[in-house]
Length: 130
Image 1 (cartoon, rainbow, N blue to C red):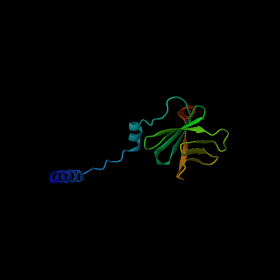
Image 2: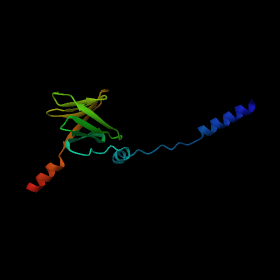
Image 3: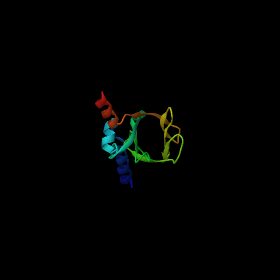
Image 4: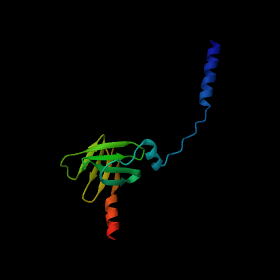
């Protein structure tokens, strides 16, 4: 019995003695690559970049908002039919495009400011016309 308690004590000390090195934070761009949170393939109706490295792409004729979060997760929100201002919502997240604001918010009250990005086609057309 005494041997068992000595062995248990040694195992506990060995487990406590390990130095766990904290893993360094992964930069946002690497997190997107590692977790697969990449821009969607196919036509994108509009792209918004939000605070904290989050990205929202409106896809399928604006029926869905695909959110690539800074931690690598990808979530797709459905459009709320005939909502004013246009709103996409699901899983505790909401994306709203107002007349003078665009925001991504969580049910817990956290809200991120977003800005629409010029589409590649629009930039190319403007460059061609000078």
